[in-house]
Length: 567
Image (cartoon, rainbow, N blue to C red):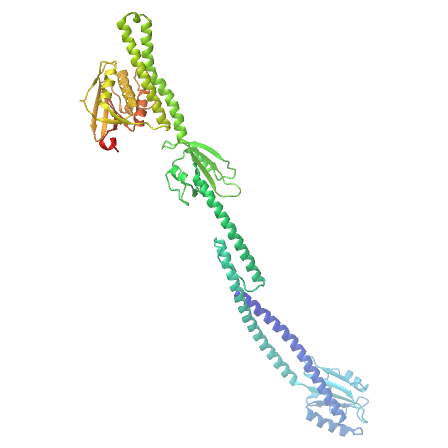
């Protein structure tokens, strides 16, 4: 800016100087020309007055030649009839070459004075009456070379003055431009800081001109923006605090799906830092959610609510909110409904498990009652035997109902399973002796080891394993063993039945799975219930089997040690 402003000042000064020079030169030339005419006219009057009234033509000629030589001018005298008295050429001027000679002579003979100048002002001609006896008119011609010299000097001075004016104008323009540029730079620097979000620089202008008014306006704007940004920042902080308190995960993303904001809950749900600027991970999302994410920033995108179940077993409800109001940020809201989904699934499983587990004791009780009603009640020994069956199955129903309720509460998360030291050998012996199958026996030495377990859940699990072995291998021997190793208690239920393939053994604990070639009895819930019961107690279930070599199902539970018994 300082350069073009300096050039503008220089140009203005130069134009002004040229205009002034033109006017001054014209006026100077006019003044010099007027003065020259006055001088020539005065000299002509003096020349005419120096001639006596009764002078002869010879005297007139001699007097005028003397005067012309002294004044360096040409003098031509004329008689009343217009006859030339003096020489036709004098001082290098020919009377015949004079412009407007006839008009000048006529004016002088008429008793009036006339003054003429050439176009360049160098030649001045004056015609005036003489009123002498032998001379009636006088024409004086003077060449004013000094006029040209004076005009040249004036023009040189004017050119010099114009050059100085231009230089001074450029210098003044540069100084003014530097001052204006400096003030503008301060204003620009303050505006740049405002653009970057810094509002601390105050302009405080010293001059209250137009630039000062601009600086004051920007300073007021800066203060208003500072207050507004502080208010917005406070509102944003409060909003982020609110988002941090939500139980839902909130993630803001841009059009490239780069994270702009994520609350703590979102990081916990997805198990990733979700730092601003990082790409939103989509490994947790299914195909439908990924498709909706891709369409989130399309012009006509609408809010979408989807449900997804990642491989981690969680259940998420995902609300996708497209940008609104000209914004460029989309929002994802993740709600973890895993607990609710687990409760609903546990409730469904409880009904199924209860129906499955209650079948056996209820069927035994119904059979015993049917036999008693058929006539066995008349025989004391039969009556006592079948009443004993009813009593044992009723006790089993009581234990089963308690175990199922405990398992249901554990699965829904409403109440954890309470474990306690359980004498495993005694419990295994009771299960073996209580089985109606004569092929069930103990296959391990007595041990006093105690496992951390829920007694009724563990008993129910073992009874289910024995019943499952009896169902698939009715004629095979079933052996129960208790082993202790590495602070763990393992209970094996082994049979010498037909066994299973690797695939069948891997899927045996799946709900409703029944291996091909089975007898078709049951619903495929026995081993799944055992698995859930053992998991609720903090244990592990494993199945080892080979075709033709039988099956061994193992329950592994924590061993009660001095540290665990007395924490």
